[in-house]
Length: 124
Image (cartoon, rainbow, N blue to C red; front, side, top):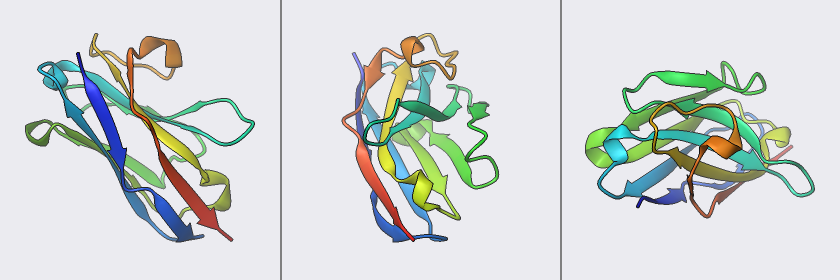
């Protein structure tokens, strides 16, 4: 069993930065792939970025490439999402998700564990 808790969300002006954290508990964190998804009101939950247990990045959504960076610290059981040059369209509730297979992907159905989310609001 894995529990995921997101933090680091908040209100920021366009062009600003935030760093989200996904803290995991459970014995299998070191082998689990973690991804960030986001969902704004009335929209589908969409993939943002993912990282395998090895630290290899799975991929980034086209909309965040060059602005967001995903990383992980297995010693701290934590995955980070550094978000720079934020835009109003980045406003959403951000969720981290875990895939026990370790492979990960951009598909929601691949992930067995989900956090409760952290809200990011970017003002123009």
